[in-house]
Image 1 (cartoon, rainbow, N blue to C red):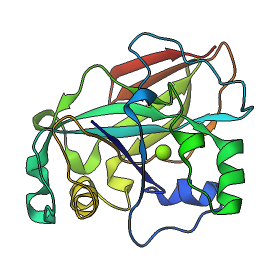
Image 2 (cartoon, rainbow, N blue to C red; image 1 turned 90 degrees about the vertical axis):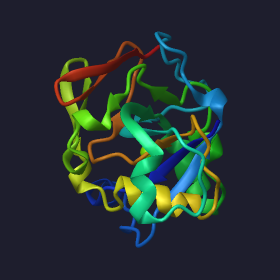
Image 3 (spheres, rainbow, N blue to C red; image 1 turned 90 degrees about the horizontal axis):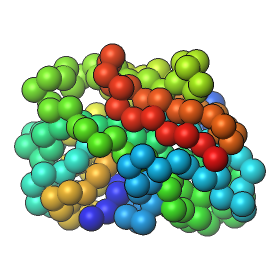
Length: 203
Ligand code: MG
């Protein structure tokens, strides 16, 4: 399986990092080795001093497809989960300056937190899925799928023009504003609506 991540999909977040608001989706991949095993703490790697949390809605593909049209994209996923796209911001900034790929900053071990449970789409208003992240019980990020620049169907359609989507593939759909640094001892808690989706300890 593969993990596809959409970048800069909320204009307030693009602005907070000084990036232009994109006119077509920006995406990159994380390897499957990036998945943080359920219940494990997240260890800050020793080669970075600035790891940021980015809370994101995550789609799980449950049907094989390529060249999927916008109109039929909703048939390719049946549930929505929540995750964190951990990012070594200092390393990413260096790579961006040099025009190099982001994998070192985005694809390292443990950098993909994914909720155990996914919420069936029947239980959600897909145009306004509310989600949030708290750090040490203080709300730090709050988002709604209503604020995405490219919606779920547009993302699936776009990505599938380049990569075949396979059953089990995951798509991180971008983070709202409020990203920030983690330090050892922090506890991150993610929720969709009122439902807690994951909790991660930082070490
Ligand atoms: Mg992200």
